[in-house]
Figure (spheres, rainbow, N blue to C red):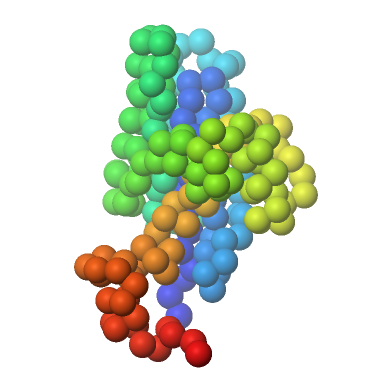
Length: 187
């Protein structure tokens, strides 16, 4: 019996738009299941927005049963009130994943951009273009929040599936790697 392909739920938290995306990893290759954004601006009450975030994340978890949850960490801005609201949105999404017993990993925006484009200062359009090429996506979504969530999910895949990441622990350089992995050496 084969185990089901892992699914990563990526979230770009926000109080006006929350991006979300799901990636299925099939034979080591990421495939987009879904990429969209939850528009929260119709609701004026911040607590109702938080409930909408929790409900949506819960629905995605129930429907797609992801094995992992990756979320973008809020970046530190100058507006303390905005940071507080964003932190609440992030916390509510994380709580939904934790309630479902799904492991949570958080990535800084710079780490996500670095993983996807090789440049931690890339703009949203550069990230989207690389996602488009890497995942063979044709149609651009309505909001960059959706592509940001997809970037978080793909970043998580890269961070957790890298051959180097899985073998580098406890190694003392290339000689040690070769000694412990003779089957990987090609003549």
